[in-house]
Length: 289
Ligand SMILES: Cc1cc2nc3c(=O)[nH]c(=O)nc-3n(C[C@H](O)[C@H](O)[C@H](O)COP(=O)(O)OP(=O)(O)OC[C@H]3O[C@@H](n4cnc5c(N)ncnc54)[C@H](O)[C@@H]3O)c2cc1C
Image 1 (tube, rainbow, N blue to C red):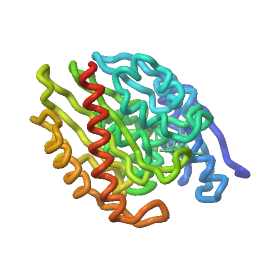
Image 2: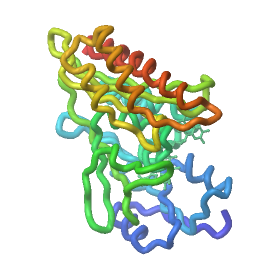
Image 3: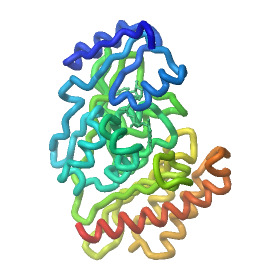
Image 4: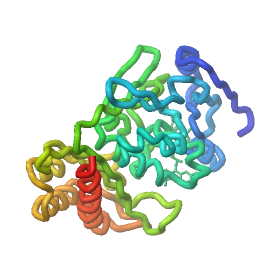
């Protein structure tokens, strides 16, 4: 890490100005749980690190328009300790809870999880299922974009040079709404997803599903928002037939790789099984809301 310049601007404008004029290879630094590991293993050699943790907008969880705005650099432990947010978005919290250990979550942020662009990132499927909108600020101003538009391939994002994800907006929840995220890993601790499934849904007073979003992680180069899987739930009481259709649609959407954690066929099969389990968990939660 010799010769790395470190800056910690205290305003968004200062960060954007620094990044706009920064040398190639410059990295934003949030919790550093990916960046520092990548530097230590010589995967990257950034000439400049721009630490965004001193910028207030990036470090707050606030209520907004009946929903929440979560700063992109808020550490995971602050998210999982925020009682109102945990009640509204338990599935996002499921995802954040799975990121590493308590120590890792003391640093790791959802912005870093998204912008590291790992297909297996645990907070991303739940954010996508939630319909989260990312606020992106850069030299050309502010953009509000769906979270799923940011990762474009392993390690690659759609962010332009100098752009920062500032926050995520989570919309207000109608009654009988809930979300859930589950992942499958070969080990129980500190491993990355073979498959991750995020599902957000809303029921009417009679228990029929009126809205759903289903997102899959670790089964394609980027997170997948699977409309056919959501359509399998909408208009049903999420009975066994609907769950079977959900599983089939989830499996059909997968475009996984073979690796030491699982073969393609295995991931495709697990995606269907896990989609059913995640839907049942979201359903149970929605019935209680
Ligand atoms: C021991 C260990 C276990 C882990 N386990 C898991 C796990 O189970 N599941 C999982 O998903 N991940 C896991 N991770 C990976 C990592 O902790 C997460 O991806 C984490 O959320 C990254 O957040 P961060 O704030 O530390 O990001 P950083 O390391 O600071 O940044 C990551 C990347 O995003 C960019 N970036 C960060 N914030 C922004 C922003 N706001 N705008 C634009 N670009 C930005 C950085 O430049 C960098 O390229 C683990 C890591 C470790 C070390």
